[in-house]
Length: 185
Image 1 (cartoon, helix red, strand yellow):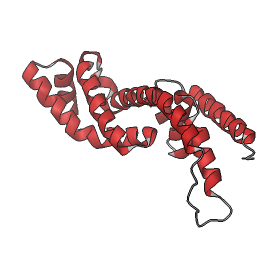
Image 2 (cartoon, rainbow, N blue to C red; image 1 turned 30 degrees about the horizontal axis):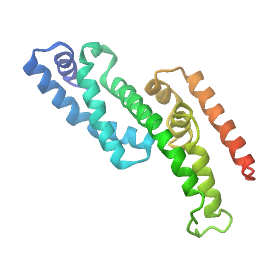
Image 3 (spheres, rainbow, N blue to C red; image 1 turned 135 degrees about the vertical axis):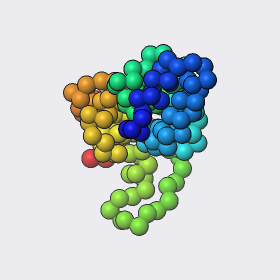
């Protein structure tokens, strides 16, 4: 949305009720897929990503007065989406702590690669879930999804140095957790 986008963005920011709603609908149609994809990378749950996409656009709708058209819509929407996903991860963490103990008794299915057992993969996934949400999101986006650190920083509203620090801390905690389970990463 490069050509003519400033008009839509200005209408979204400060238009009359009719033009604001039309601009919002245009922005929703143009950016819904990208926002959904971004959230899905963070939460790894398609149903939750759909709900969080709606939540993100609700937050965007509510915060339209704070939007700065000159700074662009994509980064602003990504930052709001990231915060919605972080909020979801924080509430989910309490629920998953209980279910992780129940999962420990389950047998994982065998996989084709004999060098990597399903048990090790399960332990790695559980260790990753135990990371604090801020560290998990930074590690997911920067390491797993291989997003540029500057994009991760913009989405999280932090500096590139802070992204590097969060990823470093996440990897250190993962190594420590896995070592306590007898897995040498």
